[in-house]
Length: 167
Image 1 (tube, rainbow, N blue to C red):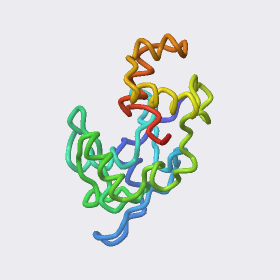
Image 2: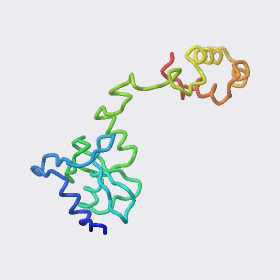
Image 3: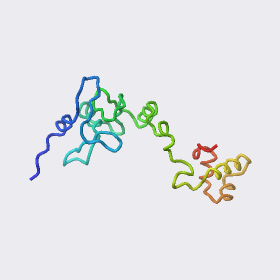
């Protein structure tokens, strides 16, 4: 016989270390590989939920579709509703960039790009050749045929949409 689960809100708040109203309220249970608190949503629901999203929903109502729950305090384990706010994906990315949390800013050496990427079809030398040929007046089609690569790749390199890190 299965034991009866406590209501979700009761289970949730029992796993939060509430401090002063202005302090972070830290999640005390399971943490995801990305550092966010997680909780099982119960037998009738799908899988798990992030603790900060559930804190927002329990305190403010449902999260509108397409919006994210962001942290003012930048503490992924924080569940204090006064530290949380709603934002779009773009706002979430700007917030992360402003706080220096994007890998491209905090750990640029971890960014696998260019010929270090396992799926790379080009290398730095070919990229420089594409740019030189284009600067010399050759068309995308001519360059693509000469190098045996798709015209779309040539255009992306020449226009600076890809391989921007290569001078």
